[in-house]
Image (cartoon, rainbow, N blue to C red; front, top):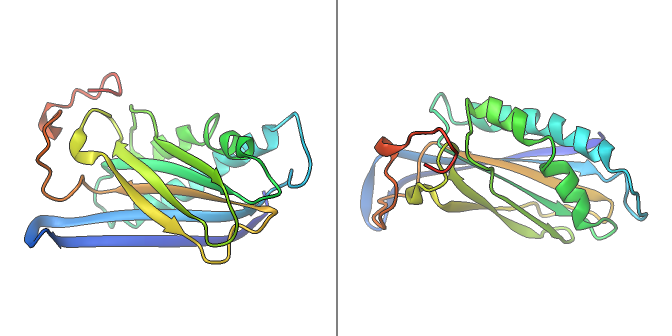
Length: 190
């Protein structure tokens, strides 16, 4: 893996809708800008990107969780933006086969599927990193997203890979669904 740059984005929410939160909500995203080894050419075997995904799952996951300042991770998500000389399948190779296991280890569990987003774009392309609870994806209070944008990436031969975590759900949730205290954490759904 040729790593060009790392970025960390931290959002801290103390109040929303004119009402204070009981405790500060923290959303953290860590992004890596890497060289795309397959930019400009079709490659059948994407195993190199799959191995890079494992490295990035560990690196980005550990960095993101560390920025929660000791708070337990509640939600997670992942995303990638492929520069215009690549293809969406490069993002899939990075995120799906091997990134998940080290990210789950970083968050201390992770029974639920890790939501993901992928797209192609040039420098400054924004992406919404979908989030939901790490152990029970039916917890509606944790259906959320974090927007990430890097002004000068991805270049045509780069890929931006993002991992996001939170220490809680949306502020003041009140649309029903499975409650935190009712999570079984056995099947990734409930």
